[in-house]
Image 1 (cartoon, one colour):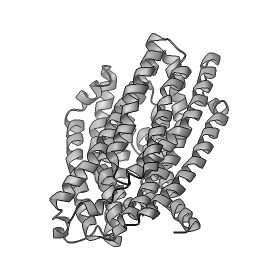
Image 2 (tube, one colour):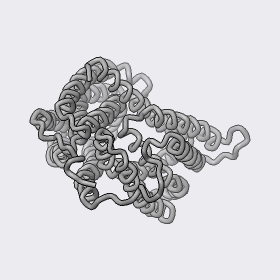
Image 3 (tube, rainbow, N blue to C red):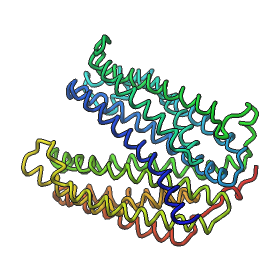
Image 4 (cartoon, rainbow, N blue to C red):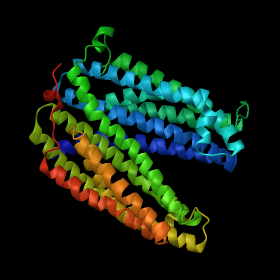
Length: 450
């Protein structure tokens, strides 16, 4: 593939993924703004219920990611018959996980919310919200299975269009049901839950119609979804398990970092939270780059063209390097002007600016690491090494250093953030070494027979 063609294909894949990430962030922002009008208790209640959803969402992503690696490689090999069988495995995983999370969320919502808070009013409001929102989990799980299957084939425009419609419906229904507009009753927090449920039902209906009309090698007779060989199943477990564990440990690790920063005081941890909110804009860009990389490289490996996969990875690293610099500069420039919407004490404002500038340096290495570990190594089936690099330095360096800095050394939080984020530099050294070794390239279509 010529360079100009490669960049055209890459942009065609990455841009819709970036837009889809932006839609998700925009929906969360709209939810927060509307629910924020109902008071602090409502914000806390929905926030705790959404933490439960976050665990559910990350579990699904981890479970499906391994399957989508196989899908991308077999699609590149043009072995289309096996795609339906892998898709059936993803649907079974979706059913398994949504059954657990929906059951707990619907029948034991108080137990779930009580994990996060012992405030009776928060438990009451959060439980009502969670009981409704848990009914949307089946549609969420199956929709994600379809999204990741289609995406592994390089189809990103269609999921973006469906997500856009679903998000717009969700926002409009939020406005009507939370506030009781256009003749609807005032449902408050529960209105937001009903809005999400309706939007999820609409979303899954659109995906069913899409598969029915387009096929994408996922539509077929019932018997074509079965018969996946034991070798493939075992290989999928071997590839998927490290990804699932990575996502779960990452959530626990970042939660531990938040606890550590909180030891420095409420005002200082608020500075970190504001800084991380601005950092999320860079996250949107690099999740798109990483996911597009995974599709392109996975298909090239599946097609048996390993030199082309390596050449593509070099081009992707160049793209990542340029955008890492752009994102770093963005955070450095926005450090002070980006805080005009906050009412902060002078000392908190100064601390927040310092935190953002520290994150501006860290984001350069953080985004390169995401590109290598999520976009390149996972695409090559090198999930075990990616798991080690993603978790070891987080658990055994960043978290202990953060607690040491706040609890023992009593350092300002921006210095603690700086010390903890040295993890990204250490990780990059090992990740880049692994990338250059080419040992991450595994043709999974040759490892297994079907």
